[in-house]
Image 1: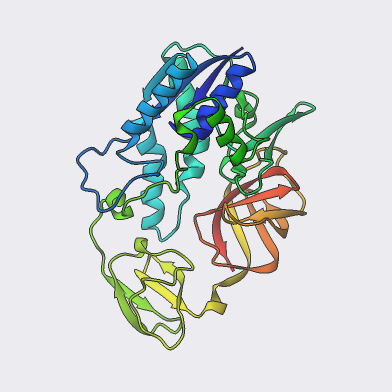
Image 2 (image 1 turned 180 degrees about the horizontal axis):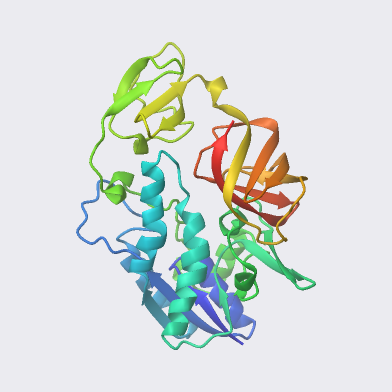
Length: 355
C-alpha cells in the first residue's frame, strides 16, 4: 500500500513517515508551501509557527528527512488555496469582532483536503494519506470514528473535528498511540536531525495586523454601563477574556467581555462577568456520528487545551445549544466547541453566542 505523508519538517510528521516505512508501507513525502507574503515587513519573529517566512527552512528539513528515509518527496504550491480558505476566513472573522481558529479550517480543508488533492492532480499515486497528528481513527461497523490521542497532553483531536467520513476512511494517524517523549526517543534512536526540534507554538508568530492588512479604526473601550474608559485602534486587537494590554486604569482588574462591531466598542468588566452558562454553535460537523435529533449528555471543550467538561447538548436544526454543568470562563465567539463521548470525538461547531 502506498501512503502519502504530509511532512512539515518537524519531528512528528518525520517519525510518522519512519513508522509507516518500518511497517512495510510504500511511503511518499509531501509538503504544502503556503507562505505567499514575501517582502512583508515582520514586526516580530516567526520561529516555531505554522505560517511564516521560515517555511523554506522547514521544507529543506522535510526534504532532508525524505532523503534520509529514502522516500520520494514533493512540494506543492498551495498558497492560493491557503489564502482563500484560511486567511480570508481569519480576516473576515476578526473584522466581525470574532476570534477564529485558523488551525481548524487548515486541517480539514487544506492539510487533509488541498494537499492530497494537489498530489493526485500532479499524478502522485497513493492509497492513503497520513500525518503526524496525535489522534486515532477506528472503524466500528460501517462507520469511521475519530478518537483522542492516547497522550492527553498532546491530543490534537480538537483540531480535527471537521473531518468527514470520506476523509477518515482514507487517513492513517500513526502517532495516536504514542506520547511525545516516545516520538522524540524514536527520532533520536533512528538518527533523525529533528529529534529535538521545538514544536510549532501557534498559527502565526508575528503581529496579526500584518495578516489583516487594514487601517486602524479608532473606537472606545467602555464598561457595561457604556461609560468610556479609554480608546482602541481596532476591535480585532482584542480577544474575549483578555486582561493585559487594555490601556485603561481601574480599581479592579478588567477583562474584555464583548467586541461590538456595530458600535466599534470593546466592552470590559470584572472577572465574574467573564463566566457564562451556555453557548450556541453553528456550522456543525458530526465527524463520528449521524446528526443527532434529540438532546444528549456529552463532554465539551471550548479551547484545545481545556479538559473536557460535562454538558447537555440540545440540537435544533442546523444549530446546537450547549449548556454547561459549571460556568465557563471567556467563551470566545468564533472559536470551536468540540463534543466528546469518552475518547470519541462526536463533532462540533463554531461558537456563535455565549450567554
